[in-house]
Length: 260
Image (cartoon, rainbow, N blue to C red; front, side, top):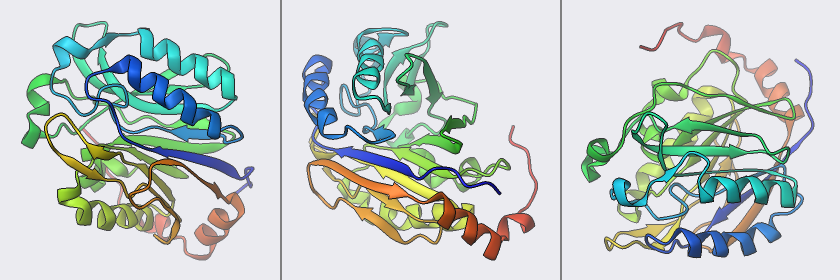
């Protein structure tokens, strides 16, 4: 297994302005300046609005203002930037869509598979049905969104994911679940996990306690943001990941399955 270069991550954990994309873009632009030098910068779920069910009023078209802004910022700081926002897809459906903006101007996406029915998300958005893997300097990065974390089958693949990436608006009321499920995903997939949450209170009065974090392949913390507000950085070692997989190749005994 060939070694890849180490990967520098920057996680942006902060408050979000309710239903105000322009204000949020301005806020993140200042924080992105602090993320210069990272290979990958991760923003929270629905970073432009907060976690809202007002999809019809807040959705941007494909290639809309926040999509253009993400591409511009990726080029400006020479890093991949990702985070989810409310998009009206070409077929007219509303999506909780993670955008993956690259410095070369390209833009890819992942649509949230598991919609949070306790908030009615399944009534206002259409679910994605495709797992996506992005290549970043030889690293296989697989993005997932918030509620996806609870479903281990969707977090598994047969392709040797190196980094599972979760972007979220995970409320403080279920903080313990977040902090227990993330290490489980790292351990069972023998990979790094990076998870970005928000802090503060949203327009519905729900509080968010952060706990953005990066975990290694044994579920050990490399970074824990707690309830801080700002940019948090760490580095992933390809050599350490490969050595552990060679020493403890549990993936060779994994069950084979297909997803419908």
